[in-house]
Length: 288
Image 1 (cartoon, one colour):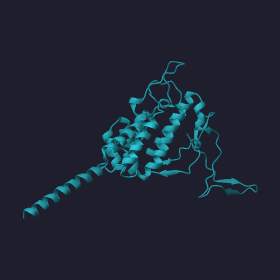
Image 2 (tube, helix red, strand yellow):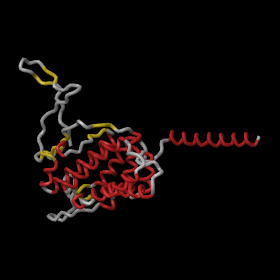
Image 3 (cartoon, helix red, strand yellow):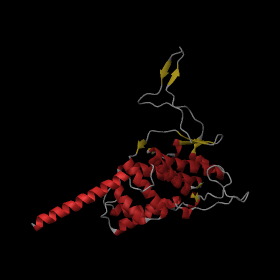
Image 4 (cartoon, helix red, strand yellow):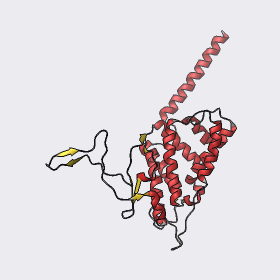
């Protein structure tokens, strides 16, 4: 995966250099390739590689870089069959995401993958997707939709694909024989969007608050990545990719996902001590 090289200036006929990239204009090199929807007619190993690269990029952009290209238009990604390289060519809809959103969102994605509905509700309220006062119907629809979206990342939904030609497992990223990496077969997930849409009708009726602003662009990109994988019928080691994203997050943050920072724990302890002291003072004053 790569992005085109930025061209800052070009040489003119008289030998001087003229800028072609400015604060308002971005000029890049012309890269070869076809839109990723045309990859659907290519061999399975190619489709697996493109789907894996696209989903890995989506996770890396959000959870490591916290900066994402949020337009999932298939024409924004070019695949070069000769080099096997996928290139992102349009950056007009990029945005950053704050740590305060990314960190709990990663915890929620992990909860979705593990089928932990209670954790999904807790993190959804923390992120602002829910208020905590929703009806049972709304909570059930929200959790159901979240678990459906998280299913590709679930280890339980993965399977080891056997290559009919050589009788071995295939690594979905590079076509190498590797029976140790289970994959999620997006070719069998065509009901995914319909199932989520069905829950969406319930949520539209019972929702008490709009989703956080970050959610709109993020979910547009995530759904685009899923739809591309479904279009390609790609077999992707999605569970392993999520584990990879969590491992990178923990390495970059120096702590386990979900582990409260030491200073945050101390703040909570101090708050409790002050609360107890204030209660005791009030009780003594009332008794006097």
